[in-house]
Length: 213
Image (cartoon, rainbow, N blue to C red):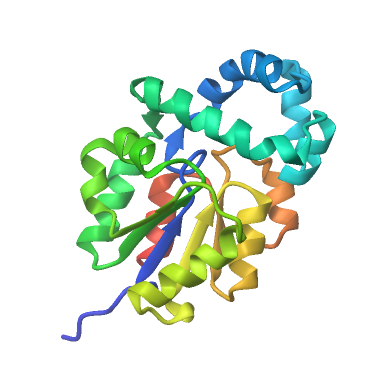
């Protein structure tokens, strides 16, 4: 009997909001972060409303100067390095990564977070990741996707990018790879659906079933 191969050979994961349940930690940082970098800290109701907006619109709504974004991102990475022990993976994520690994599908993490922070939160599951593309980037997520695809020598048709924000879906479309949106992250499901991902999943187990089909 022939062994059926998985449709995808490489999965490109966003980190925060897809693998790591860091939203509560991030929201707790907002008041002091806003004070330090001189932007407006939203209340709980506004945070919920902002979930449906693209990142660029969130930045504008909070009065964040684009010139301050690199400093804010660096501050967040530094804070997370000190408090990584407070952040957990979403339930089911270790099992998802294990199933992909055992099924012969490689996983990579693409994140503006630092590789040190990503590895710290992943813990033992970091050994299941084939490549990391982390830290600040001048060229956007699409360029990172393309670089990893070339580095790992995989046909774009056999690659799926998994994210929780509209920009993740847009980046996947830009480099002609499949896009999977997850409903358990930061982005609102309605906004993600409007970006027309190839798949919308609601649990890590559902993601594994699709990726290994």
